[in-house]
Image (cartoon, rainbow, N blue to C red; front, top):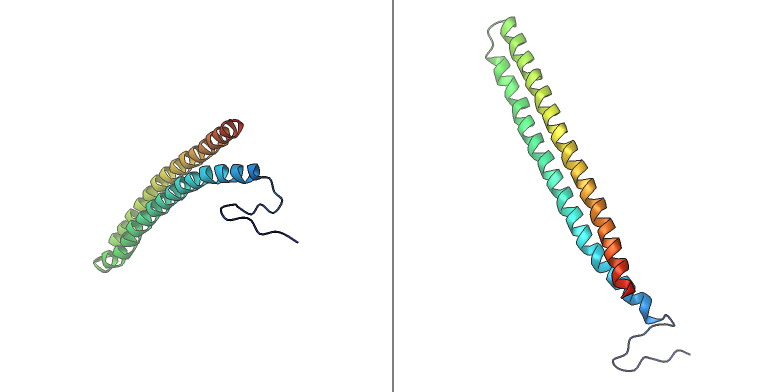
Amino acid sequence: MLDKPAVGERASFGVPPWPIGLWGLAASHRIGWNGRVFEDLARLGSVWMDFVNRRLKEDISLLPRFAACRCAEEVSNVYAEFWRNAGEDYSREFAALSKFSGDLATSVFTASGQNRQSWGQRSLQ
């Protein structure tokens, strides 16, 4: 039968205390890392949503521009301008998002390596 731990003692259930201490150290580093990753991913999502919002406004404004056209040539010009602007917007946004995603991945893996190294150095102390 298992004895209850005395007041002020922690139940270890036959596990030596040092692995529990290492787990706490590893978890504390991962919490900060996860927070940075979440913030960067939230910023990436926010940038994308801002772009989608801007493009949606442009898409919606196309119909009134068509309605104001008086001939087929004007319709053709409005349509060509719309697709030219859309292509430029999307290519510019994808380039910016690709760069941001690359920077995010680099910082995540760099931070992960630094956390692993600092965790290993602290566990040896």
